[in-house]
Length: 132
Image 1 (spheres, one colour):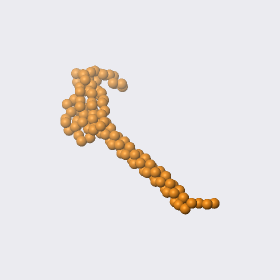
Image 2 (tube, one colour; image 1 turned 180 degrees about the vertical axis):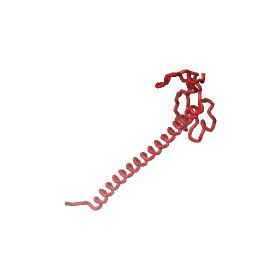
Image 3 (cartoon, rainbow, N blue to C red; image 1 turned 45 degrees about the vertical axis):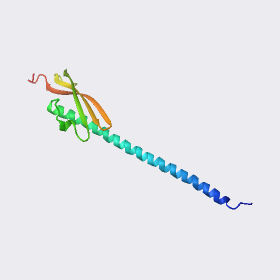
Image 4 (cartoon, one colour; image 1 turned 90 degrees about the vertical axis):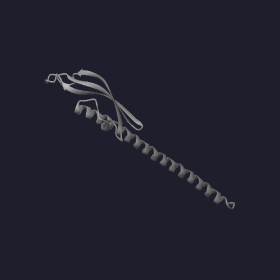
């Protein structure tokens, strides 16, 4: 069999080029996945910040039974919560035989790129316990 001089070199170079293209594409896929995971982690942290704002403000309102939440609770480095009192209501929560007086509030919690809204009922006094 007759082989021309240099044909083996051409075949080896073509294989090397194919392997190099394969290596570059794999490294791009890995880099893309790492960037995607970093973005997902960032978004999860933002969601948790906004969610934490809802819980912090709702907890403060429930504990002190008030809608005037201090700025230190509504605005932190992790979240900012705006409050809108919707109405005074009388509810009969499940498991209670007496009415609870309280108010409904809409909480809008924002943490950079994430926003969570919630409507909560804050009991102020239970009826029938001498608080009317």
